[in-house]
Every structure is written in structure tokens, then in C-alpha cells.
Image (cartoon, rainbow, N blue to C red; front, side):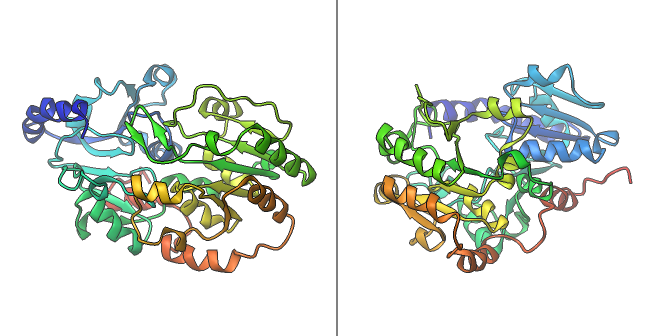
Length: 373
């Protein structure tokens, strides 16, 4: 654990005692320290869309709270992560995905939504972090019994803590695709080098694919009437990215906001996904569309970060990309038969619940949050 995180836990110790004293009210608290997005954003939007804010006061704590504060819906308030502490201490229901207050729940339902089922080691499964207390919740989501066992190991949880559900963010797959992106291949690499997270796990995409490689890939895209949208991970160390290719677009969260869509709307509309060890491919399997994996650094990644299973490639059903020619071959294959479809469907049944999305409502039902209806 970093010195900053360790100091934070020490500073929060008195708040654990305070949390046992303060009465809890029928309020909902949502926390994120790495942007208002992903599973926490999905839960929030479901709550507001379905009118839960008529019955419950909702507080959202996030770094960019000022952007949302003045236009918040009825009975909703946005606060800073520091300013949200008292709201957490007095709320009966709480949700977090990125980061958390290291405060033990008391007379509360606190749901750790996390941000994806893990292929790479997280939490107590990471080397050197086996004995760090990761358990500051009453409930933890898992998308299947297979992942239930893994999540319990990652967060020192028990059977009674687990909610089997789809990721809240995959509720977006229920909505109609956006036609603008139907000929799009989305490339979502996980972070490999992050100063913010003090990790170096493998080669970055920018060391694997140079300008010559991207020129070849762009030509393959052009020939197949496809566009590649590359979204680097928010935690990846990226300084300057050149974007001089007709059929390759490099985007970020601000671009998605300008388009008035979210990442999972883009995925729902896309033709295929390219990733590496990101949990996004577990979600994408629900769509039944082709997936390719850039795995030229898999041995280094296994040595540095490690995986939750001994043979991760058994779960990574799809085209394997190790050099730029493989990348082009995958692009060219998208106009032909999907040779991995049956195998991918089989793995999907093991990794994702058979329920048709509805992850948000499943979680709300599990903790007893009821709508006005």
C-alpha cells in the first residue's frame, strides 16, 4: 500500500467510531474518486431515470462535482470527495466503484460495484497485498458463480456479501445502437504504465504499434470500410498522441461527452472490440460480437501483475494479435464468418449471468431500495 493510502486509513480511523454513533437516514450516497463514470454513473442514471430521487435524497461525491452541481435533478446533490464524508456517514445506502472511504459500514448497505470482473490480479490477490484490508462494504457484485469465488478472494468477502448480477454499465446494451458507429471497431487497451497508480505491468500500445504499423492498419480499415476508435485507458501514461490517419480516431472521455454518448453505448453500436487484459471483454461477450486481443506482452504481464487464473487465454476467446500483420488480418476477417462465435458463447455462459442485463435494478432490489411505485 502506498504511503498516501496508509496515511488516509489512519486519518479515517476516528470516522469509523463516528459512523457507529450517527443515525442513518433513507438516503443514497454514490462515491467515485476517478471521475463520474462507469458503474457508479450507471446506478445514478438508473435511479434518476426511474424516479428514485422522489423517495430518496441522493448525494454524488466525485472530483468534478462542480460541473454537475448547478444542473442536478430534484433531490440530488453533488459534492467533493471531502465534502461527501458526512453524507456517507448518515446515508443508509452507498455505492462505490473507483476508490472508497476506508470506513466500515454500520447499519448501512454499502455496495462495492468495482469496475469490471478481473482477469488481472486485483485486491488481496495482488502480490504483497494479501493482508491489506480491502473489505469496506456489505455487498460485492459478481457476474457469475465463477467470478463470485474470485471476487471473494480479491476482497476477503463471504458468500452472503455477493450479489450475482450483470455489471450496471451493461444495462446500456438494452438501448438501440447508434447507427453512426455501426462500422466501428473499438480498441480499449488497459493501462500498463501509470505513475498515478505506481504500476508498470507491461508494454504500452505506443511501444508496440509505431507509425508504420498504424499506417498499415489504417489501409486495412480503409479497404474494409471500417473506422477504428482507440480510447487509451484514463490511467495510462500518455503524453502526446498523433492522430494523422483517415480511419483511426483517438478519443477520451471528453469526446464521448461531446457526442452525448457513453463508452458502453459506443460498444453496443460497434462491430468488434480489440483489447488486451481489460475486463471490458467479459462484458462485450454478452453482445456476441468478434473480439481480438493484443497479447505480445502476456508473459511480462503475467510476471509483473499476474492473472486471477493460471491459463488466462482460455477465457480470451478470439483473434490473437502479436504483430501488426495480425491486427490487419483481424480487420480483414470482420467481413467474413465469425469463427469464434460458438466458443465465445460457451465461455460467456460461464462468465455472465443468464439474466438479460438489468444489472442496476437487480442490485437495488438486493439492498432493498424501493421506487415510489
